[in-house]
Amino acid sequence: MSNYRQTKTQRVLSCTKPSLMVPGCAVGMILCAALGLVLAQCKGNHPKDQSGRTISSGAAKRKPGRVLLVGGEIYPQPAMKKFVEWAGGKRARILVVMWGGMDHDGGTFNRFSRNIKDFEPAVIRRGVSIKDIVTPEGRAEFLRQMNTSTGIFFTGGDQTTIMQTIMAARLREALNEKYNGGMVFAGNSAGAAMMSRTMLTGDTTNDGIVPDTLVLSKGLGLINSGIVDQHFIERHRQNRLLSALMKSDETWAVGVDEGSAVAVQDERFLEVLGESYAMIFTQTDNRTLLKLNLLPAGKTLDLLTLQPTR
Image 1: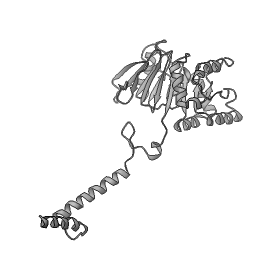
Image 2 (image 1 turned 30 degrees about the vertical axis):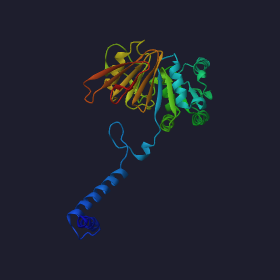
Image 3 (image 1 turned 90 degrees about the vertical axis):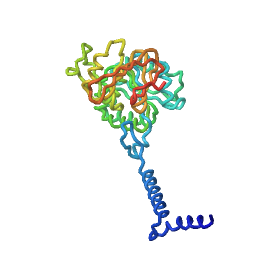
Image 4 (image 1 turned 135 degrees about the vertical axis):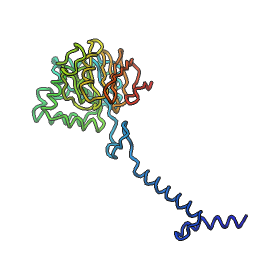
């Protein structure tokens, strides 16, 4: 037995000598090589996105993207609570942007403030006006406001007007940088519709599924794989959202009803908040099959697996 142990020890030690190719040494060399391969893979192991593609180290450090989309003029209290929580709770500093042409002499800001004050954000402030934002002084002031805020809310009106104002003030890139850095974005009605890369406009008809005649435009681009519509079930906008999805290159579309909101995180998890439903349409890679998910308040959908998570 002692001779066997000595022989086994000698075989293992002989692995340090390349000239000795006894069977024990060969096994040791294979193990060493395998260990080196594992270590090399670990060093080069980068996280994957939901499509399985490698994410660079810089992109992996990007903070979670969070967007709250309110379906109409009603501010659902669960949605307002979520917005304040995402923006920092009692430390939240909310910037309210009213560039859709529906300020009504301060009434929009006052109504928003009344509907969010119970959740006790630290600051609720009114953004630079649509008139002043296109001036150098107004743009500089808005950038200062944005840099000292944790959440930004776009009110309703006309989404085309909002985007025209953003482009005229050269703010699209700055807003996207803030979003990528972790700022929480939200909007109601037109302020929700403009959050996606592909944007529905007010010139769109609900008469039939007619993708060829549908008018689409360029939105803010915080959501890059979906389309947003609002006042959805109440105004029977299923046809136009289906048409938009069929015409665009996006993979999903959500219709948010009056009195409801959806909270979207990382363009993957979609939670319905409020009183009504959200409709989520998705299409296959070959664009031949559409699927509908009707999601009630309190439910969350995984947009990757199309399965409810709760």
